[in-house]
Image (cartoon, rainbow, N blue to C red):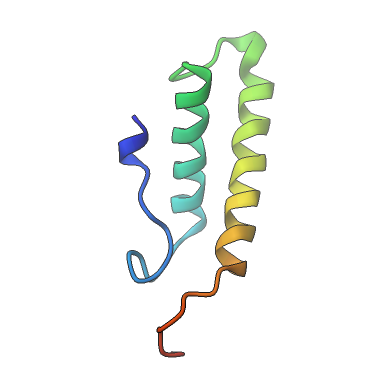
Length: 72
């Protein structure tokens, strides 16, 4: 399952969308939890984890410096 998480930084991906970040976060949470979709009593925790990981991922991508790349 985690093999489907794409690298989201240049030069692998130039235009990363919020949808890309959320999809990666969702795949991560699915892998870690072992659930493709959580039961109703776990949905809030599952969704919260996806959101927190998406936010952390976006912050990481914004702060990375890729050396050897020309500014656009």
